[in-house]
Image 1 (tube, rainbow, N blue to C red):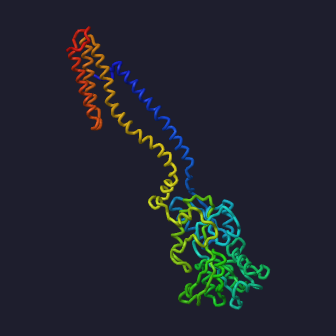
Image 2 (image 1 turned 30 degrees about the vertical axis):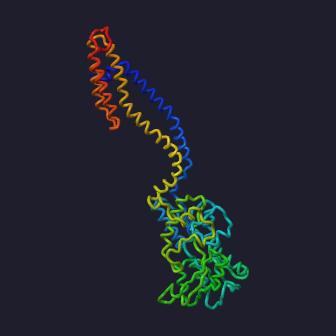
Image 3 (image 1 turned 120 degrees about the vertical axis):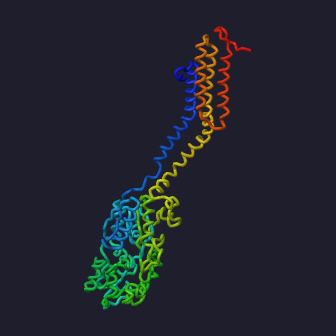
Length: 453
């Protein structure tokens, strides 16, 4: 017989009692859960936004050192799902203008340019390689230092280039007024060609030693490379200007070019970003800089770059942290995407812990309540069947109660409880047997409800 189809009125009362218990539980814990959900939802809006998936990098002239570095950074970002667009520009000044106007997020800028422009909202991620200032002149022109430029035709680079900005600053400090020499906007390979052709007397260039025009000029007998005897003095005046040495034979060992050690003053190329650029992207760029520039060059030892020194802009907070501690623990363990999510979501720990404390406290009594309820719900049924059995007036009614008691005993046999609660279950089953025996001892007459002696 299906017990559910023959539930006594007492069982209906038990169901209502369950509903009361459930409502009590909801009233007790419902407001707490609602408040916690509200706190977590509000906290989600306070979590740092995810890093962008697209950025713009301002490089430099096509084929130059800046453009090559920008392409290397783009490849590194692409490995982590960040797409970078590279802008070819005239140089450092143009790059800064792109950053300040919001048209670029990252740029490579020569030190000594940004500081003089007195701009705000830009930060450095560190210097990445030396960019010596090369001063080549025709051998028939006698030049000892920058003070000898008066009356000469000098290529100092185009407007917006880092070489022009540095040349103007150094010449002004040296006391060489612009009107005392003829300035040419040529730079790089075009200036080198003009120098060899005799169209100019001197050229200033800022570039790494790998530029083809440098090796060509250094090997040309009609051209000489000026050794900056006062390089250390410039370094003392401007911390972003390093003193480097082009050692004998370092450009061409077979041809012994140069034929003697040459001192050069060297600004550095630094990575400059907007102070609003996501820290995770900054970290990726610094990681890329270690891979690209850490091998060493003619002027730098391995692992010398990138560096937090030799910069002329404030380091970003992320750069300070990275140079002090390296990649974060999560970044060393997880991929970029997973580590970034975990680092952003740490603030969620506060509401989650707040929610966890009452939940942990409530778990044991809730567990005990749920286990005991499995057993006690049958006691309510048993009490109802006992009352119905005592009230039975015919053998058929009493047999119906016995059948339902048998079904109840079978149902309790299917209940699963932990071992620590087994005694409660067996006590219930013995009580069911007790009620069955009680009904057997009751008088068969309809008017007697007393228990026999």
